[in-house]
Length: 215
Ligand code: GRF
Image (cartoon, rainbow, N blue to C red; front, side, top):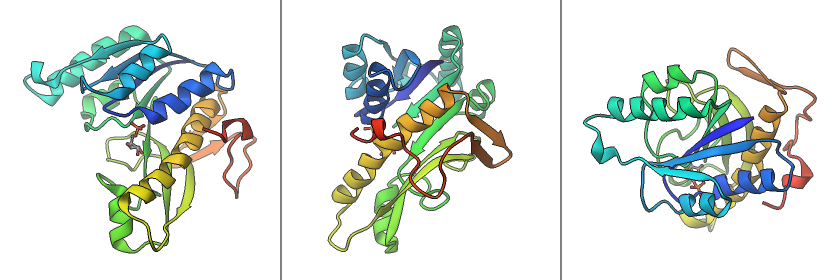
């Protein structure tokens, strides 16, 4: 399975997926990592793994649609089976989503449909939720609402700050994102409308491969 990843920053989810690939747990190849930010630490992580990287500067494009058209052109050449959004902080145009319909996945730091959009962890704290979590989902034209592949439930503790809660959620993101990519690489993911069926998965628990646990 060939993957193109889009990032904007730290790249810790990208790193978790790269570790899974390097250890031979995920049978996939990331051919290109693209960032809309020159300073994205994830670009350095990708380079450390010998992966081609590209900083595509939005300032060089008159509009989001023009930027996304360039992205479509570049990504199409990679012939990807999967496009992984890993902390990509730009809304994708409908044209981009149509071009790669059903092949784009994202991770969001809440149990969607709760707390969509920015600062999901802060939203959960301010709402007073006792549990929140993270979600890997297919990307559709509606923001943070596509069919759900995997979710992890994470408790909110009374003394939590946005930072401590974000860190706790992130440790689960690093387990579920590689797991979702692994399932996709194994061809076990079937989408029927909003329902995503994972062939032979264990439900009712966090269905994560133990080898992916220490990320
Ligand atoms: C994560 O919290 C992810 O859920 C959200 O953006 C953040 C990206 O972090 N979409 P990283 O760049 O993967 O470290």
